[in-house]
Image 1 (cartoon, one colour):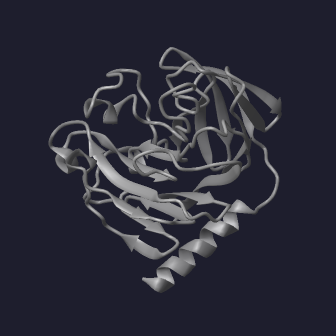
Image 2: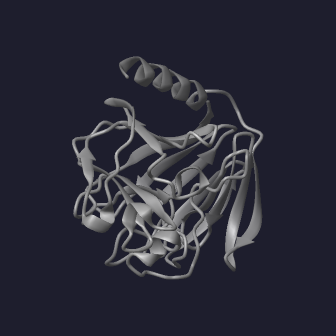
Length: 263
């Protein structure tokens, strides 16, 4: 287990620090909403312009690891298969709630270079930039509302489908493992992690998220099905959060990297 953790860590670091980019960003539409489509060597993504977050994130086999949908909207637990999904889903409730989350209308986003998108909340209190490279993307949080916290969430179907009983995940403290905890039953795993990875043995890609700055905030992992069946539901998503407990915990600026690794 320890060896697997070390090997995978080296594999992921090898993609996060490689080279320049031939990324292409174009205007598109998804779920009847304006998007930026990012075509890169190692992934394809759709970025919701008004929401300021990803609505789709596809590996090179076309599996969508987010698969946001507008309907059903904001229903527990049904929306685990639709509108709860997204990345990074930064701002929760209150003023600016939904900033960083597909499906909302609280942001403006624009291309600032050939491989960079900048998002600003309509209130002007939040700002971040995504820089896209061949095999990874980097988020830099550059301005936050200092009166409140935020979190970084990944909510979507690992490998393109809801299959928690076959999926694996890993973090910098443990190797790949199977944890069948159901948010439908208020079951969660908390920790303090630097990076996490997700995969399904039926898919040849692993998706990883790295938080560059070390902190002491609680992080969060669980599964959420779109019905009372929880882990056995027809559809659903993984729920992972840096700086997530009962409320958003992150403060100040930060950087994150996301990317796929073929294994």
